[in-house]
Amino acid sequence: MKNKNIKTAVVLLSGGLDSATVLYLAKAQGYSCRALVFDYGQKHRQEIFRAVKVAGSAGVPHTVLKISLPWKGSALLDDKIKVPERISSGIPVTYVPARNIIFLSFALSFAEVLKAQAIFIGAHAQDYSGYPDCRPEFFKAFAGMAAAGTAAGKKIAIKVPLLNKDKSEIISLGYKLGVPFGLTWSCYRNGKKPCGKCDSCYYRAKGFHQAGIADPLFKSRVLRSESR
Ligand SMILES: [Zn+2]
Image 1 (cartoon, rainbow, N blue to C red):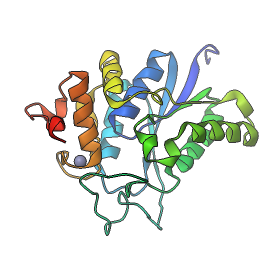
Image 2 (cartoon, rainbow, N blue to C red):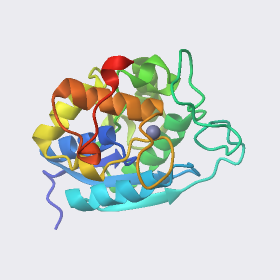
Image 3 (tube, rainbow, N blue to C red):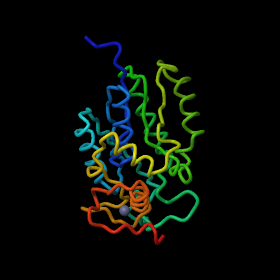
Image 4 (cartoon, rainbow, N blue to C red):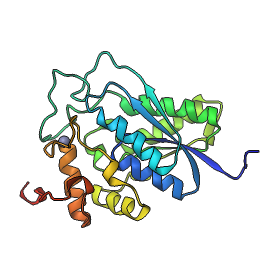
């Protein structure tokens, strides 16, 4: 018989270290978690494989949901648009139109069926400087929409626990929670090893450096964050 005191959560898991940290945090908060991984046609296929590994390491069941955005519209989806080495300002070419609205909508449907109490997503402060679907006002609006448009109403909370944290704070938190950083993948490019040059690799390296923790993916690498 299901224990009524057990809280259930759907956790969006991307294979990156932010969502891995959120998964471990939700577990530490006593949630019985279900990981939702999206195969949305991203060029960096590694992250799907890594997300499955992270879910396995956390002992959490996962679902890989295959969806398609045939109109593309992002450097992460379109072979014709190169992932840049560094992104200057404004909305980056790696923005995937309305991605978090799409992902959270699927998570909401899943959460209703599971009678879950929460959905967790790993968006954070750095994300919303460029990505409009990572802004605090977006998550507030989405929660309002979920309450108005589902049978569950306000019963499903939209949790964004990293929202006010920067990368180094997330890494420190993940370290304490025992997140297997060596299984995660942050690079926007595909390959056997992270490129070390894209925006996502840059912020990962900088975050580990500031946190004073060695990135298990780059055991022998000399960090270059000081020179940028
Ligand atoms: Zn990279």
